[in-house]
Image 1 (spheres, rainbow, N blue to C red):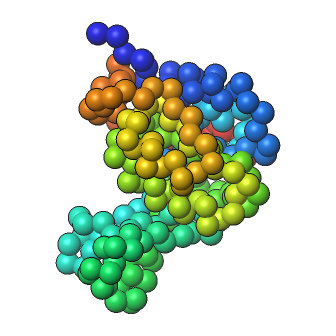
Image 2 (spheres, rainbow, N blue to C red):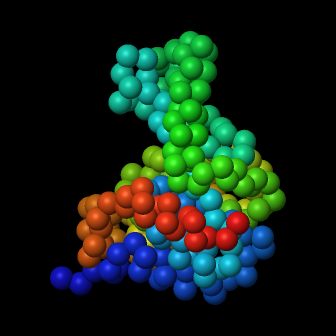
Length: 215
């Protein structure tokens, strides 16, 4: 069987080659951890761009934490993105939403400290932000990420992924300025099916790659 990508680093190099054909003004690469980090690392290196991590943490419904009604998107100015239809149905109290947001921000701060030490999130205002992941299936996490990033007033948002189904990309198109995707198979299946090696990216790899990227 032929795989489009050997591993995430290979996918990143292929994506970087495509992106390097362009001239981006003041680019900043944001990786969705953990799987997006090896891909984004290759992109940032090729573009000579800064790179940061973009954490997206789900806000669960009261009494039903697995049922997401929104997400917290971190950064220099963290944002909460709520699914309005679900919020209208469940009517969670403002206090509950505030407490859940703070709980997720605390978890984001813990993970950011693990991966980046004391390095602070990079301000997105007026930057050309390139959001990178190792692939998209349903697009729920990426959609929240795009909405959260938009609230930080970047100059432009580009979504760059190695592989995604056309249906998910169509749903995300109005959330960003441009989408760059190398493979858009239909039917789709799972992201991992397009990689020869899709072993989980562990914390040590994220720490190692982020320590090598320029500030």
